[in-house]
Structure formats: structure tokens, C-alpha cells
Amino acid sequence: MNGSKQINYEREEKEQKIVELEKEVALGLWIQVIGQFIEVKGLSGLLQLEEDVNRLGEQQILTGAWIRTIGQLLEALSVQSQLGEKDKIKLFQEQKIAITGDFLVAVGSAYEVIGGLRVLEEEAVEPPRIVP
Image (spheres, rainbow, N blue to C red):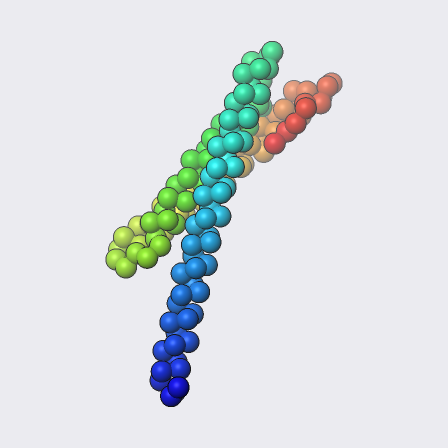
């Protein structure tokens, strides 16, 4: 193989590997979305079974989990849309949506931390079964 054909072959091989890895990233994000929905379903069920429904901390944890779920879903949808996108403007818009999703995940996590701390304060006498 001559030099320019070798360079083109290596470039195509590298591009193919990048596409494969981008698909792995997207798959990982979708797996996280599924996990988020499972967590929110479980937390919602636990909150419904609570005898004392005025537990602000537990409600904050659930709200934070929902915010994270929405953020994770936005990010996964956006990354999926970025795969193979050739239009630079659309690609840039999708990347901004992914960043917004990341931001929501961070805000949701922070809200859950505040809720978790409140749960510990509310239940100082008898610790909760779990604090996610």
C-alpha cells in the first residue's frame, strides 16, 4: 500500500472507531435513563407508603430524582440526535441541549442532597431505611 492510501485507510479506520465509541456513549446514556426511571418509580412507591406524608426531605429527594431523570432523558435524546449529524448548526443546537440536560442532572442531584440532609435531620431519632 502506498503512503497516501495508507493514510486514508488509517483515517477511515479511526473515523469508524470514533463512530462506534459515540454509539457506546449514547447506549450508556440510555441505560442511565432506564435506571433513572426505575429509581423514580421506586422512590415514588416508597413515598406513597410513608405514613407521614409531610416529609419534606423525602419529597425533595423525589423531586430531585425527577429533575435528574428529565435531564438524563434530554441528554440521551440529544446525543442520539448528534450521531451522524452533518449539519453544523443542528449539531451545535443538539450539543447545547445535551449541556442543558447535564445542568438539570446536576441541579437534581443538588436538590436530592438537600433533601437527604433534611431526611437525616427529620429522622434523627430513628434513621430512615434508605437515603438514595
